[in-house]
Amino acid sequence: MKPSSLFVVSLALAAPALAQSAPPAAGAMTLDRFVARQTERIMAADTDGDGRVSKAEMQSLASRGGRDPARMFDRMDANHDGYLDRDEIRAALTARFHRMDRNGDGVLGADERMAGRGAKAAGNPATPQP
Ligand SMILES: [Ca+2]
Ligand SMILES: [Ca+2]
Image (cartoon, rainbow, N blue to C red; front, side, top):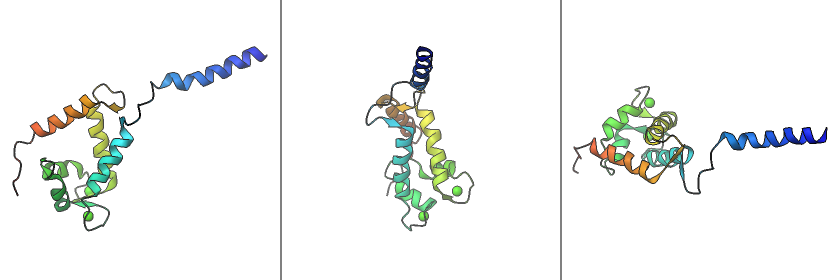
C-alpha cells in the first residue's frame, strides 16, 4: 500500500518536470517578456492616449528604428480599421516571436534576436530622412 502510493506520487511529481525543458534563465527573452516589452514600445506611440496606435502615431515611433512603419502597420492592422489595438499588437508580436525563435525552445537567444534584427534591416533599404 504505502510503497505503491509513493510511487504514484513521485510519478505525478516527475511528469510536469519532464514535460518542459529547463526553465529559461533569468533575463531570457521569453514570449511573455518579448510581447510585454514590445507592446509597451509600440503603445508609447499612442500620443493621443486613446489606447490604440494610429498610422501617424506608428510613423513617429518606427522612423527612429529605421524600419518601414507603413508596411509594419499594414501587416499588423488585422481588421484594417486604421488603428492598432493591443490584441492586434499582441498577435503580431507573437507571430514575430515564433518566426525569430528558430530552434523553437520558447526563448530568443542573442543570436536569434540578432538574426531577427538583421532580416528586418536588410528588407528595408529605404530609410526616410527627416
Ligand atoms: Ca492613438
Ligand atoms: Ca486594427
